Length: 591
Image 1: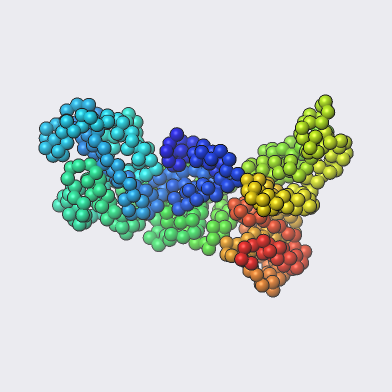
Image 2: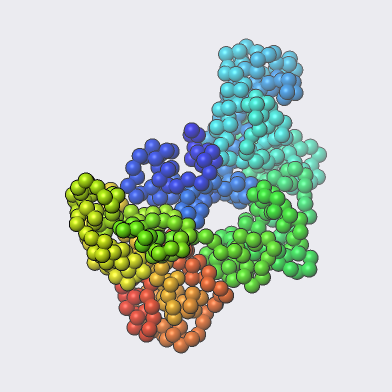
């Protein structure tokens, strides 16, 4: 297993917070706190991202902004022979984070044969000095671990990479930037571009002296002076800088508008006729669009898109949610050729109660079966559905054993298995099946949720935080499924409410037949503002309506990422919204 979280995820792919806590952090039971632990671990690190299922994964290092990436600047000393014949005598490296050196690596290496006399005079490294050093392959392997998750930087970097890869017997996975080629592009007119000449030009305090660590430190100083020059050219991502390193100053890079901001928004790739080829959303428009011109994510479709594109347009938005909604609207309106994923409905998950069974139990299914059944959904998250089903077993006496048995099962002895507790089929369907359906539809079952909440509070008061956290997750799972069902199944006008990021405030989204009719943020004491908003929505005025039924799902899916519960209310009159806002504000800190 890798010693770094980046290496762990790179070898595994997308991983749940619980798996990270258990397998990487060696915390066998995080008791519902795994997400928080991992979020604190990766906070501010652009190499990690959360997918829509709440799993953590690594991003392509080439797509990172130059100010986000970590760099390992390194240098080698060798025997003087070619990589395939010679060997490494020393590796020196420094790790840069936020423009500062945070770690160093230095080791002599035994190349397995004699060092050329000229190289001995140049470096001062002799056969006697390396005789007791670790083999070159071992040192190269340790260096590979040191550089994990970082962009490699070197002066004539391919030379150094070739020696490391020959010693390892495999290709390095890290993207690499070459200060020699970058300097030739960014600082034209110098007589020489040797490391010592560039150190003189930039006034670098560390002088290169043909020893690996000193030369790596000098190279780091040069690289830090080149970064602002890259930014002036409009090169903002590792991928763009790497394409310059390879000498492919592709004209395509210059279709990026010079005024493309570091801001939220939606971007449009267009061809020479002005037809929109692709629509996407971004938290940082400049970095996201720039990533396409550094090789993208390696997919052939991305390469074809870049070759066909003749320009990029954009629209800024005030929030990530607004960008999500605008992207969905534009994909449906324009039907761009490269947005195949956004032009089809996404599959979901359902909660199914099979009425052909004597004692039905809830199960997660990918699609309705078409028989005699109660089906609720679709829901976007399988994990949320599973958590809800587990919670239903805590508050309903679900069947826990086969219909026939020799006496009550273990759960039946505790009164938690309906058939074993003496329930007949009619009573089970009335008090279990129908009550589950009503609870998930938001038409009843509040007393059962209240019982769970009281038990959660009791455990927390007794400092039994593990059990309290588990019950909290159960309650949130049920509340979110209820909110999704109530919102997506609503006819007429409904509102979805959630605590806002601003302390003591609530966000309200109003929908008419699944389409956004209005959005506002309300704070404590703004009841008249709530009434005016409700009157406008009920009176038929719409704000930023998006075609198609997806808009409500987008909003509910976005709000489900938050830890605070959602509330869905059907609006018959303005006081319905006033009461709902009061209920949500009552549970909001600072209100």
